[in-house]
Image (cartoon, rainbow over all chains, first blue to last red; front, side):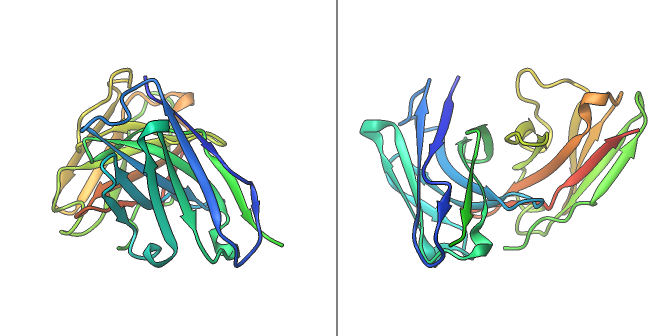
Length: 119
Length: 109
C-alpha cells in the first residue's frame, strides 16, 4: 500500500517561493503505471490540480499556474517536489501530493499540508 | 481549463438513493472514459470512490456506482447511510491535464 507524506513550511511570505516535498513509501516509485501529482484545495473550495510528473521526469502543468510552478523528481530518495513562485494570498490552501494510477485517477493521497501566504 | 460543474448540495434520508451530476465538455468528461469520484470528510484527504466512470476500487461499497451520458457523469449512492455525509468531487482527465469539479455537499437527513 503506497503511502505519501508532504513536508514543508506552513507559512510563506507573499512574493516568496513555496517549496514542498512528497516522500513516497510502500511501493515502487519508478513504476511505469504511476504518475505523481500535486493538488491544492483553498479553504471551502474544491481541489485544483497543480501539475504532475512521471518518474522519467516528464512534467505536466495546469495552464493557469504553469508560469509559476516547477515540479521535480528524485528517484534515489523516492521523492518529488513542488515549487510555486511569487506567492500571493490566493495561493493559501491545503496542498496534497498524490499518486495518479494509470495516469487517470488519484488513487493514493498524502494527508495534506496547510500553506498560508501571509506576512 | 474550467472546473467541472456540480450541484452545490444534495440531501437524502437514510436508505434512500441520491445522484450527483458532474457536467463538463467534449474535451474532458465527454471525450474520455476517465471520470473519477472522490469522497472527502472534513479535515481529511479525498478518497477515491469511483474511477474510469464506473469502476470501484477494492474496499469501496457497492452502494456507490458511476455512469456517464455525453458530457455529464453521475455518481449514485444507494441505501444512504449516515457515514455517507461528506463532500463529493468529480474529476476528469483531459489531454495530459486533470480537472476537478467544485464539489457537492451531501447531507443525510
